Length: 183
Image: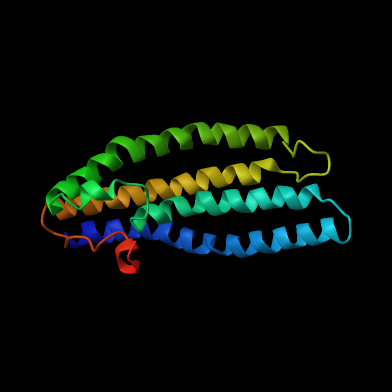
């Protein structure tokens, strides 16, 4: 059972670390927006490259945080119902949700996303604007990385819930931090 729980932690660690690293995209996004606003208002330079970079940072932030939110239990769920369920029922719902929804969705996105990125790379796709960023495949590959992290997180949750149902894992700590702040 220790091996089972260790493998769950390893699977979830990838998503957790990627999400923590993605937090730096907030800083990059803020700096890019500030530079964009200053250059447009005071220097009167409109930069399509900066605007493209803004949405690239925003997309990377969102995509790289998907797995992190799932691992930390901050994803969308119906907390009102979950608080009324027992630990076993919550574990079964989490397990079925990951098996029936999260994993298949990730596999589909990764399958079609690979073709999406590959086509962009082979065509040398660039921004629709002539002065925009080139190499559009780089930001499109963030889709693959983000959903790979979400898949890894889901597999970790599946293994953890199986261990929990077998009695090898302690019940989870409250997943929502909203109670801590009174929301």
